[in-house]
Length: 236
Image (tube, rainbow, N blue to C red; front, top):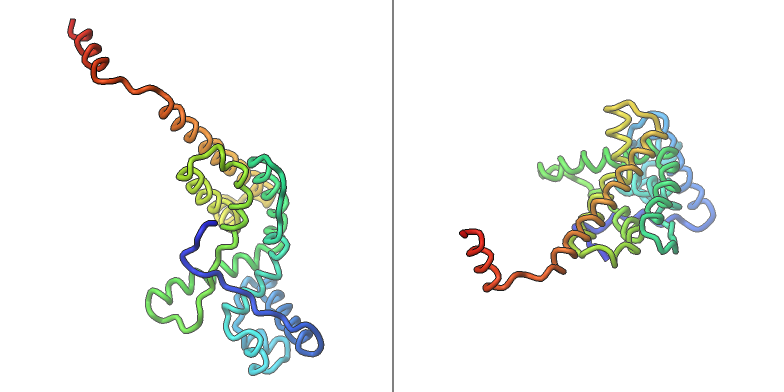
């Protein structure tokens, strides 16, 4: 199991029933709407005011923006995180993951961008010693991709498998949307196609590198006598 540098942020547990459950859902839905409409990350106080809930009540459910955005992303991408496949073919399993989850990334693009935005903002504040709330920690893709590439393990060395895991994490998530849509102006469908093309290229590169290393290990190394004979033959 891959280890992350930081523990992932966990969404606050919603109340099971009654007024508390309704209030929790109202605050969460309000935050989702604010992000969807404006791309703006609301403060807990802003979400409370829009939902007509007291600040004190809102902070009991969501003590910080980190807690609020964690709940927003968890609500948006929960089904993605629960995806599992028993396909024994690693490449097909990765394809299945991309094809099934990128449409949901498209649907909740604003929420994913907001999460990335908060993470970057807090990174700067943390480095400057100005962060006053617990940081929002991303990284669920690590476990998701680890499951996807699991069938490839017998074909890859540990080093190459780790590098493939790292590389796929760059092209799986909101990052391809930020680069390909904002810089290149691509549409959603072309973003999905390009991300899957990159995933295929990375898998090809990993398999090729492992095959080359395995072939190199399988070749018999010339002993000292053969090396000397070969050198003498060249001098003749």
